[in-house]
Length: 217
Image 1 (cartoon, helix red, strand yellow):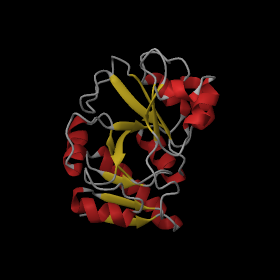
Image 2 (cartoon, rainbow, N blue to C red):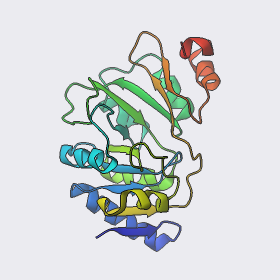
Image 3 (cartoon, rainbow, N blue to C red):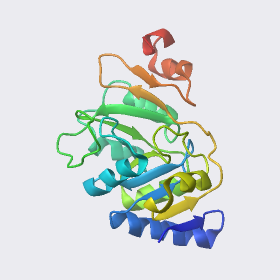
């Protein structure tokens, strides 16, 4: 049975996060608040749960799921090597609305879709999300919407689209940014912007010491 918890109320928040942890460890799906938009999440290392996440969204494996982490240090166990610029961007923008695409560690036994050896990582700037991530570990998370429809910026919008396919909805009010994260690909010879978002190209280029035009070329 689907449960909705109002995280503005301390008791409901505590019970809700406990319920979400139980659902995730049981291979089920959770909708969680982040600073950008609401996300639908699963345990990143539970391949059946990630498959269920893709199915809930009506999304194919050709668009792999990103991973949210609860601390800066988590990334070091998930990447093959730390690419140039990654530490500078993490220090400048994490937690926050910047996602980084990096080469994943070959030893990782997860299946996030057809990611071709890469993974998109982000640490969100939201206390409910961070608390959940620090309890569960890395989570496969995508925007909480059916593919082709706008990302949900409230828990109610997410539930309207995903309904009983999700076990637990954590409602923390409207998302602050109400826009999906900026994505930068660090797997090539130079960083490359894949998606514009709340973190501007100019700010990213400044941190990397490069011209904005090179980032979007």
